[in-house]
Length: 277
Image (cartoon, one colour):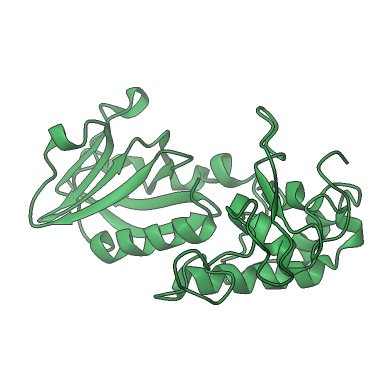
């Protein structure tokens, strides 16, 4: 599943292609909004909150949506969704059979494929789809005090599960939950009350910002961009820890329990409880 830095990069790509443009073609190929006509709307901005993408539209005079006021197209990629931007030609439908969003402005076309969440709502109602989320680690107006309060609200909760809960802070996914646990030297099942949460959140902010904006450092946590050396533990089951040589351990995902994703850790560098906690 794309994480906050992934969605932020998608937003910048879409903004570079569409921001300020008036849509000349637009379709939402989902039952709830199949008849929505967004042609004639100007793309005001493309914002993010955690893993949620918010494309804000301003209906222009003469457009069919003129009387609706500012609108927001809310999308979430989850596991399978992805965006593609093409210039100069449209994408043949036969090559992408599951195009659920099409936004076109002249020769520029953005396609949302296999997008599991596609919602059109008034911009004033954005809180109904993202209001439950915690502070976004990538926002300039990140509320550190609110994030710390949410993060430490249940001191007994496991560290990785807390990071994965988007109601606590928005933007961290499984990759970052594993890598940040390693970077602070704690087992993913360590109670958050035993972790320096302020330090962890600060590190998480720096890591996501670097990943989102660096041309070569996207989701590189080790500082080594060579293939196979970009992560400390994630995806490295049985391979020696880069620090101590201990084989990296892995706990399988527990279906139906969002806080128990596939987890990697170094038993030596990350002392503390195991998955049977």
